[in-house]
Length: 326
Image (cartoon, rainbow, N blue to C red; front, side):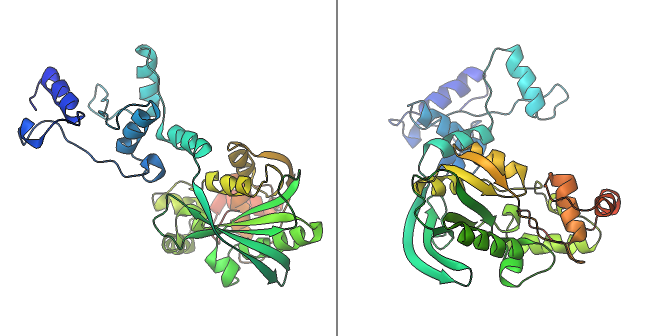
């Protein structure tokens, strides 16, 4: 495990050889072995997992070499610089996000664990419970409420709803999530068939604890987007691959999607679903969530038609009440 490139290359070859033994190497050395998590990038979106996934997809032994490319000033090259570097040297380039999307489209990642009739105040449904095979928490289940015979049907009415404990359970007025869930169930009931998919992606994917922290930041003057970013998260951390696989397992591929979020349309279409129509789901604002809804419209592109006064307020000094974006 010497210093020169030749010695390091030889070390890499030996490390990837199943016949190698620990006594073949001197320690400490100049190569740093890393162990990928089982499940690869679908379990941890890291470079170690990406390297092993690429080798596996290529039909090669699950071992690879990774390194960081540095700029001339000594800083680590980011994606724009890496694209330039790849073009200069005629190299292919792929992101971890690309690899996650590729695997999500081609591998079965969900398993149905229960199915039961579920009469509710909003109609009679069949509840299907699904587990994400990459999730260690076996009780972290996604629920599909199905009305009627949807398998193989075209233009099925579908709502993909992200979990919101504060809105769905406690009736919080800081967001419109609870009202959206109830209205979506009523819409499916009136239509006579459809699916309400309840995805466990609390707080746009950041979890309940950080969502409540985001609420604290909003009380100090940040809007819902700024609060998430202040906590180190993107505006929206949700992924629709698991939801798309659940719908496909139910035999649904052609849908009328109940949403105000154009990104959700694109997200589901990217996983092979045909979205034939967007069905609006606009909940009248209240005094607690006017600015929050305005932030959704102005910063996240939601089609809410919030009044001009609210849009102007959000653009100038948003104090978004709420954290869910549906």
